[in-house]
Length: 288
Ligand SMILES: Nc1ncnc2c1ncn2[C@@H]1O[C@H](COP(=O)(O)OP(=O)(O)OP(=O)(O)O)[C@@H](O)[C@H]1O
Image (cartoon, rainbow, N blue to C red; front, side, top):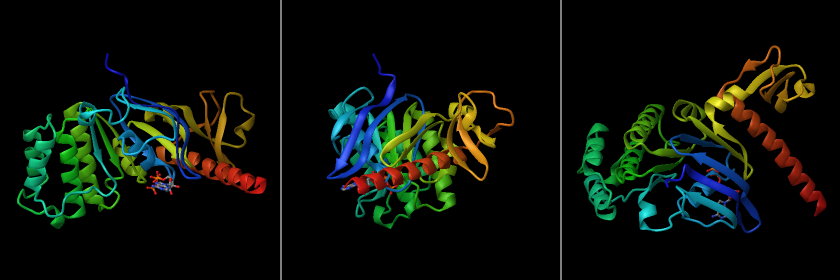
């Protein structure tokens, strides 16, 4: 039976020496979503995506991707497409060479999709990849990942270096690929406007821990901005409060509660994690 989850982590932990990149992360992401993975620098986003691609292994805990151990075998590798942070390509290979190599290495390669997309984004097949702009390189890397016809596309901040126009084109292509392939996608990004534009599922990761995860629509419905001190209202959890206003979670009917934007919600969780992380680092230093 087809697993309903693209990613399923249980107490997933990854350490680099004494540094924790992921700590006891539990996550269950259903199929059929475009997932935005957000968090500050060093939060553990790339680590999670690299674990999902099988590039590194957990220190403890488990992670399954499409129901199997990451990169379990050739068949599983073919079901996952990955575009790394710097959208790597082979500088001395032409665009056409990249497509030939993709066809050679992937049994499920879709040449029609690859050729059509290269033409649509205006890439010259004869152009050497080393001479492509950042935006063109990102489009080539995404085309190669998508032409495998994977069930899951993973992007590690692929559009970070692109100008706003190229980024919009890239995000547009991403959504089109996901729709055309009937695939799921996970993308990490610092750009909340991009996440807002294309993602329908959100994971906030700060300081190596999952802060909140769920469908964007549900998260927006369950979080509100409240004036005054909501700490005393039953059924409401205050995520972050400042300047006499609080962002709170809960379905309790609170008079005067206002809807929140995605950016506000993300920033509230990041602010809370920054404070709790600083406090726990401080107490660890005192204990030493
Ligand atoms: N190969 C490595 N060796 C040692 N430490 C590492 C290694 N890779 C990541 N780290 C550390 O693990 C933590 C998480 O890093 P990671 O790259 O996963 O974060 P990130 O959320 O992707 O950050 P950014 O947004 O800056 O790309 C950081 O403290 C980082 O310094």
